[in-house]
Image (cartoon, rainbow, N blue to C red; front, side, top):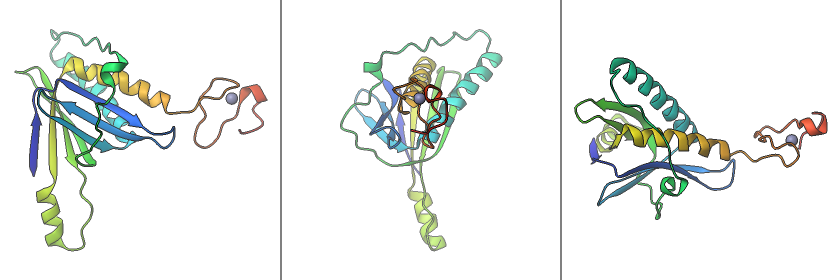
Length: 181
Ligand SMILES: [Zn+2]
């Protein structure tokens, strides 16, 4: 395993590029002298958001004196910094907390594709990379709020009723719900 540590992240964010329904999702962290961008799936962003929210709940239960996260962000700060040149595609995503630093580490592990023989499989395991993004709780709170907004925006909006159009189609209340459009 090759580990890369971004500590502390001066910026930690996610973004999506492409048309609604065909967007590619990225995670990006920066230190003063390094930027690492990774590619992942929308579902992984959704899971990460849920994991961070649950993590904060448990954390505040365990450490009741801990300050609360505000989570206010400005969109221009959250947009990904070009060039978008992802290092790898994420397989596993985890998070850990360091109470001494009061920092959360987002651990992104490279996806490993199944190899034909055990030797190649072992080599792939050994060569897999890990990026540790060390963030403040506040940064992650902003990440969550921005991520939720990003997910919402991906769905095209029906011009008649202003409701999102799901990939499987849309029963529009303005058309009495009879027709899909
Ligand atoms: Zn509609």
